[in-house]
Amino acid sequence: MNSATKPLNFPLLTADLLGQTILKIDNTFSSTWKSLRFNTMLLRSKFSKRSGVPASDVVYLLMLWVWLKVDSVAMFSKNALLSFSAAKKDALYDLLNREDLDWRKLQRLTAKKVLKTNYKNKTSALVIDDTVKTRRGKKMPGVSSHFDHLTARCVMGQQKVTLGVVNYEQFVPVDKEIFISEVKKQALDYKFNDHRRIAAKRYEKSKQQTKPEMVCDMIKRAIRGGINADYFLADTWFATKHVLRMTIEYSLVAIVRMKKNKMKYRLITNGNAHLLFVQELYKQHVKGHWQTLNHTPYQSRSIVVELNLASSAKEPAQWLKVKLLFVRSVDESKQQASKHDWALLLTLGSQLEDEKILEIYALRWGVEVYFKEADIAQSKGKPKADKATWAMSHIKKLYPALRL
Image (cartoon, helix red, strand yellow):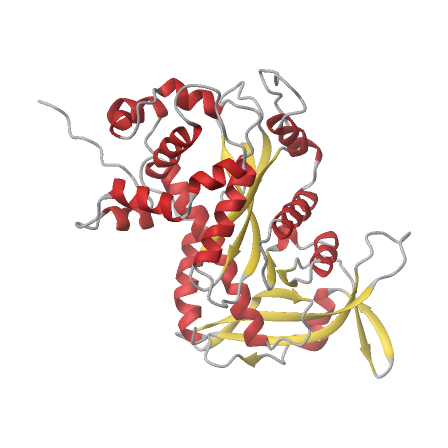
């Protein structure tokens, strides 16, 4: 007797789409490919082959394979490859191993096309975040040790930094980088054919650049490529002075979550300047002065202060007016707020209302949902609970409260 077949573990959004009885997935994929004029974008990205199956056919198959997340190219080619093209699995592997193809440019052009297609004067934001992809194996090449804040332990793998554009309806990934730390770094077990090619250059940058440097370069490429937004959103891992200066350069209104560290803020009261840590600001000006945000299960207190964006004491001071928003949630069952569990948001838009700051920052959870969808697609078995699950539950609660 044949054993039961294990069902494919598709992401939630993919499963909902495939579950539609009237859907013909091959026709849907083909029509979307044509509507986006993907062949034109491949030509602009200089995807070409000298002989054999055209590069556009191979990329079509690769994207269909990745979207459906069949375990391997070999399994996909064995079951369904001939239904779409005369290409063999070797053609797919050959294209994946090419060192001269600019996949980053292709992703950016695709993102721009999707955003332009769905653009309706929407409020949008550039959002940055990272996630750790665990790689197992004693001699796994190109990996290093990273702290995974979901499991609260260090793991061997790769840290993927993702830049995307988010609005009230969608999240569109624009650019990606892999960050390799110096801790337990494992070298590649092969050499690049030409160190001047794209793959070799990107690998070197993944080892040499810091994450804030990666973020600045990614945003420069996105804006230079015609992808614009109103705001910049990030969590504490990317809330650095270097990144804040970059947002000013590109006229982005930054809204970031700050750490409760020893960074000093200058508060001017009665003509006198006081340099205070965030904990000191909380004790002197926030504690006991919370105000309930309209139509939301949150309390807040905002203070306009100044922050020196100079990276070191040797540089001239660059004091800039910023708004600090202290936020804490309210226990709906007891109608009492937590005394210690509060968060700190910082924005360069000091004129923004507290409700607007929280409303815009809530868009950042779109990238968490994106990570959750991608992680489920790449994993086997039942997905574990993570911060994205928490994020989606808070989105459902926060958005109706803000009347979005």
